[in-house]
Length: 164
Image 1: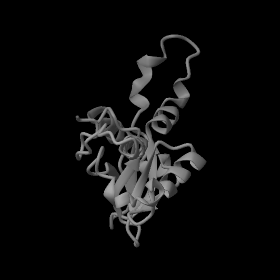
Image 2: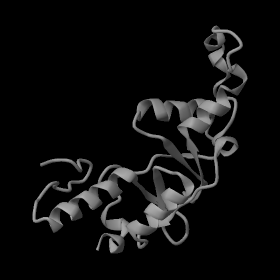
Image 3: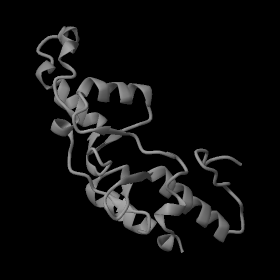
Image 4: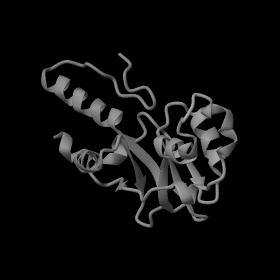
């Protein structure tokens, strides 16, 4: 059953390592992380012991950094030097997270309840160990569905879930 599959068996299919910053990382460095990783929608914030304390979403970064630039005229992009004035700690939102031994059903319910596309995965001390996203959940659901029909639709491979 899909709902019994543990997160640890699926979480590295799309993202092998979670992307994180420290709480004192300036917003412009967080922006660089997003630019260098265009598929990211969240960057996790950790303390000096690599314990998860929050996350910064791409939309939060944009909304907070460009809040003063909401266009009263079309020339607002001339003021982009404002980015970088805040830190990750000021931009972060509290994390919703799961653990490796939680099930994919638990992950899906948390994502659904909080309208998220991904969740950080932590150990018992809240150290960041990975993340799980909707693509990984979708991959296992389609694989199980096709297997039940006697077909081999997808071959699951780390970082390449849709190879045939």
